[in-house]
Image 1 (cartoon, each protein chain N blue to C red):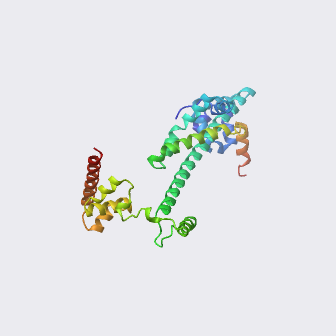
Image 2: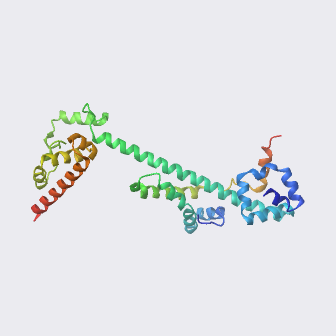
Amino acid sequence: MIEQLKDECSCMQAFLDDHPQILEHRIFQGFLKDPHYYRIFVHAICSPSLQTIEDLNEAFKSHYANVQFTQYLSKTLHWTSINYDRKRRNLDQKQILLDKPWEDGTTGNPLLDEFSLSRNDEKVNLEFVAETNDLSSWSSDITLTKALLRLTSRQRTIIIEHYGNGRKNSEIARLLNISQQAVSRTHLHALKRLRSMLEKEGD
Amino acid sequence: MVEVADVQDYIKEAQAGDRQKLALLAEKFEPKVRKCLLQTTPQERDDLRQELMLKVIELTLSFDTRNVPTFEEFKDHLHANEPR
């Protein structure tokens, strides 16, 4: 690039000797890559006049604005998307804290603990609160409750562990000492049976 | 990337209320936006896309094109920083 420029005219040679580091600047390198801008530059240096210098100034401004704007926007978009995902993950974690009590029976959230304490004080009837291990309390729909209770004990255990405690198939398999495939099969079988019982009831 | 003839003019015209120029500028960033969407899970992508497009519009309308240097200013600035 330097050789090609120096061949243009003697003024260019003098200019490059006066400003050795201008060609190392990335914005300027990008500027010269555009053949149109390149010509404007050579024209302004080799035959300087008010008009050619003004053209070069305008062309450079337009190039600089383009680079600055593009970089500024790209960076902002990048960070916006990273922050967005971070916020979403934090939110997900908070939700897990809220819907699963800690081992000591508190929720880990002072506000919620106070809330549940005050509810106890008012002797709220807690009978209607669903118990994870009691399938008959899961649904207020009588047909569905009946159907759930008609499953085999293994099917019930898998349903409770999967949907109630949110365990993975592999964890349930270890718990029951059966294979993962067996858990999956029994699970699907249980759902199929529930569906057929509900459909029969619906007729 | 969509080639935009003169970004500076497009930004000025978009800021003056030219919706078509604004749309063209936003389109220029479509590949970047698509790349950014990979930062999050598939079910979040529509929401993130909206947020990113809003950002593009917001930044385009507030971008200040006045402090862009001319060639001479750029050259003098380099010269001033030159070690002697």
